[in-house]
Length: 483
Figure 1 (cartoon, rainbow, N blue to C red):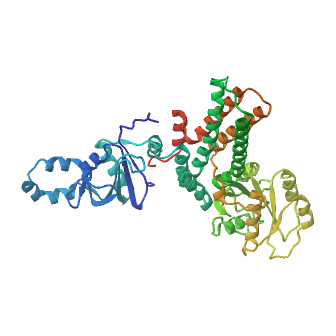
Figure 2 (spheres, rainbow, N blue to C red; figure 1 turned 90 degrees about the vertical axis):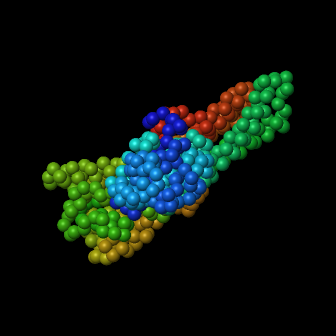
Figure 3 (tube, helix red, strand yellow; figure 1 turned 135 degrees about the vertical axis):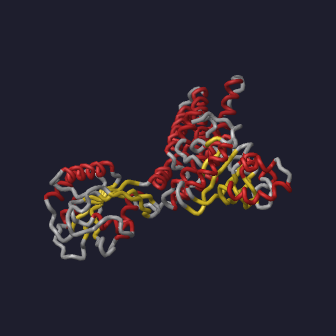
């Protein structure tokens, strides 16, 4: 990544490339309005540098050479040829928005050009603003500037990416709460409690003749225990936060023609997999993301586990087995109309250590399967008809129960979901716990002070107060270029 140079004016396309109603080219930096003056022709003849903040204006993006020629002519000389030449130099008809510093996303002057959505139009507008003094933004550089300029902290900056990548309403709620600063406020409260304790303890080190009173030590001890307990609660909710944010991997497996593809279609509520009476129709894994009770579930329909008859089937079975090994949860499907086969029993033995739900499909047909035997191998057994959408909701409920162990969870309660944040908070909690133990054992306050300083440093890392360039580059490189 280009080393931070906040003096640069940056530009990028902020909407996905392709055909669409609108394509947005965004500029940020001290020269944004001057560049806009060079490329934008308003309907009323006014320049962007004269526009009020938070206003939008209709006009055209015009090749800069047109302005250079006609800007030096008298008004009467220009008028006769202006309309014709303007039409031949127009790149696009646009709406231009001005947001002046410091009340903008980056706390810099921002100009957003709303073009017609299309690769050619937006690319031509971007090329023109780059020719006139902007440089192409690095991935995530707009949000990085918002962080560096102090509009948001690092936890809030990372929440922007979480919102962009949210696959469910629950993940979106967690991201928006973090962007609002809910987590940051909690972390700052923890920091304040630790810094208050450090102030008293360090004063004792600097002035040893003034011993800390028993009451003060008792108060510090109580405050540290309270912070430790609150951090433990935060980490406990983080387990669910990560699930809402990252989801789980679920694999549907079983021998051919038990209805795996029909179940995938039923869960998706659309025809995604090809379903035929012919065994072995699915020759490769099919992967989709679905929302089950607010949980992003990456669900995989695998090829039937059979003795392969050719190289293609061998590859398909190998890939199916790989997905099964990596799955958080396996849905093992059986055909209710048939007795358990050797393949069924062999796969059941191999999956003995995996978290699995047994699903008996085709309950609308005559039943011959040995349910008692399945009940001995599986803690959970669901009977469905994927074709007739019967009991699909019961299966969804069972998947949610697997994740939350029967406890109702609210995404709003999960303030922390990011792996980096969890690691830093966990480190801080362990250090505070150690500081409490040191006080309990009446060790020197120097040990307590060092643990608390290290705990504060870990909490600071969540907010980006002590972040180095490598960490920032790693975080913001995951963003798209226009954000």
